Image (tube, rainbow, N blue to C red; front, side, top):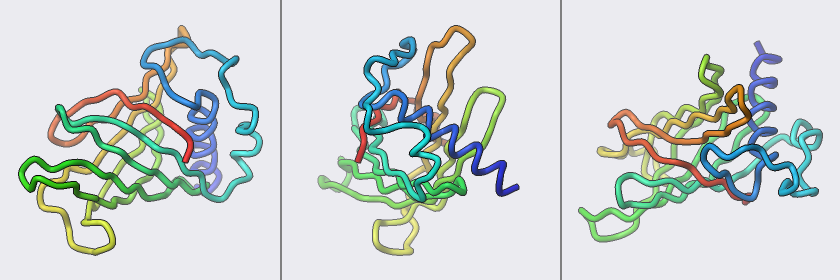
Length: 157
């Protein structure tokens, strides 16, 4: 089971790193823009990898920082503006990778106020799907349990 998670996580991180600095939804893979400092062979050796994810929920842009370990588990801190409160909020959640028929899933759970163990009452855990179809078109998007869907941009931490 450990090798399965390492393979899934390594594949996920390799796909992420191969297209930094940003994903373009449904764009063909462009190897010429791959940063030379981030190589898939190095990713597999890293214990923890960090990427920044930018996505939206309606008009509200969310900025997430994802730390993913080689075992497929990690955490993500998401900052967003709350119109109800009139200020920025920050949420921490547990993340894990999973294989699916559609691609690699990154599944969130247990969203809490950042720095606490207190569950956020309104924040739906984030889920992401990373896929490359048979024609080489890439998709990376988020969806939550409230049926919000958004494209995702990726940058290194």
